[in-house]
Amino acid sequence: MLDFVQNFPCFSILLCMFAGIISSALNGKSAKLLNRCVLILITVMSAVLLVYLVGKGESFVYVAGSFPAPWGNELRAGVLEAGMALFFCIIMLLSLLGGGYKLDLELEHGKEKLYYIMINLLMSSLLALIYTNDMFTAYVFVEINTISACGLIMIRQWGRTIEAATRYMIMSLLGSGLLLMGLVFLYGITGHLLMSNIHTQVVQIAATETYRVPLMVTIALICVGLAIKSALFPFHNWLPDAYGYSTVSSAAILSSLVSKGYIFLLIKIIYRVIGFNIIQDSKVINILFVFGLAGMIFGSLSAMKEKDIRRMIAYSSVAQIGYIYMGFGLGTTAGMIASIFHIISHAASKSLLFVSAAGLSDVSGDSTDFFDLTGAAYRNKAAGAAFTVGSLSMVGLPLFAGFISKLLFAQAAAISSSWKMLPTLVVLALSTILNAIYFMKTVVRIYTPVKWNAVLHSKVTIKDNPVTAFALFLFIVLNILLGMCSQPVMNLINSGLHMFA
Image 1 (cartoon, helix red, strand yellow):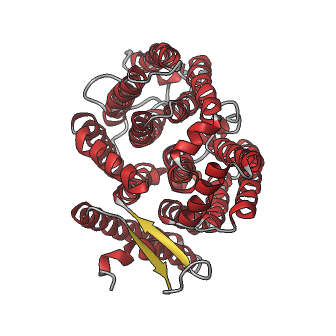
Image 2 (cartoon, helix red, strand yellow):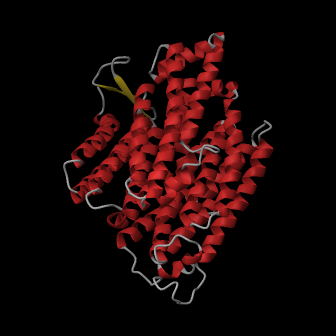
Image 3 (cartoon, helix red, strand yellow):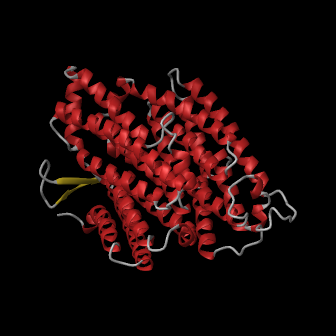
């Protein structure tokens, strides 16, 4: 008999899906209310599930409809899945609260409910990618995730967002195609779609060296496909426009959650489908390592050249995705733990930056140009403080989440006995310096006093939106908690990886 709490993964996915369907029959305000209620409910369920799994000390498999594979479908929940689901729910809720005040201005009348349909479907797909134990189900929700994210980008009907959505869709479909080809090959050589069953066959294939070349091609296709979808350098050209010109909430959600859903699926494939040791032997992680290092440098250099604050933050995401893949490429458990923690710390920091940047823009004539943002932190104190905290975290100062990430990456590199140690430490140091240059330059700019003149006539002090200010405060608290109380989070990650294996 299942404990009732073991139904929560399935309930969470279905609640979001049905909320999306029901929202189509509601007006904008009702759809917004429904979305908030569902998000709060699944956040509570995820928290209860996490506490249950920590106490239980082992994962469980939920068989949908009591039909075993291959006829039925399976969900699997361990502490890592439950913890990631809880964190995704929190970031989604805070991003919507932080940027919700601008939706009425950013969306055409009548499109509010469409926006929340996309949000509900996106949340459903993220939860499914976290919990699913079936590769074909994962692919289906990858596509739902792609379509929902594309809808969030292009819901602002103007030229730049339509162009950005088109570029995003082209690159995402390329990644989806490679992923599907990899899954087809995987099914062809194993005869299974369930992750655990695939893993059993892959271990036998690796041991006997039958189908060795097809297996290596399959691993490469899956890794490259998901790397494209998560904007690993050099497949990142769609990202600055997609993040820079979408709504405030959409930018925060896209940068913090969408790419992380694909990355979490890749982690599951590495551990539970292919096997960590087999991935190491395939040398594919060396490719991820090199492109990760390149992304850390070129993403930061691109951010330095930007004069638009939102595009600068977007390019910074390219560098941060590089950090995650660099950690994968180290090929060690310590590197994987560092990458997973960075998924969390980056999501907490980047959504904070996008929401606070919108607040700074509001008091600067709705401009995102650096020159026009001069002194903006004095005109919107909450946004200024929040942007400063997010920047310090991205640079990696102690007390904030980003510091723990970089410390973990440095430790993982230092204990590595391979040739990767020196390049990792050098690029990590160089990337940190570049981060400091463009983020601290922006912080100095927003705290530089400016005199009133005709050009800056719209720069007046605007009273902080209380809901947005509250969301920014919670983001700051979350960032500091991750920086000061990181050990329990790392223990959960470590325990979750052991459950994966």
